[in-house]
Length: 117
Image (cartoon, rainbow, N blue to C red; front, side, top):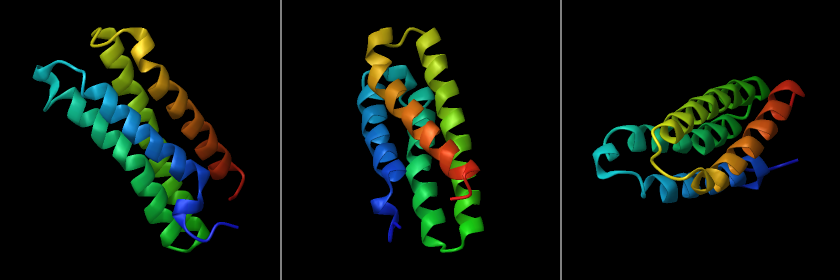
């Protein structure tokens, strides 16, 4: 069993996702610096932050609650990425890393939430 949040694969993958999101949004138009780019970054950062906070609270129910919050942030991030795609801020290929990591993180979160961690 993991002793700290840093040992959790879902936390590690969500940290990789944050790095990929920052790289992607750094290439968005300058006019989005305080708009969609900022929202996307906040949603991405929320994922590992909530996983870490929930894990360190100690109680199984608290951890699950924070995993649900992280999952909701992932859904928010998915929506914001889709908006950026529809606005053609980058080519579809530029989203590959973010899409792959986000899908993986969401799958892991789903399993943790619904398998009674």
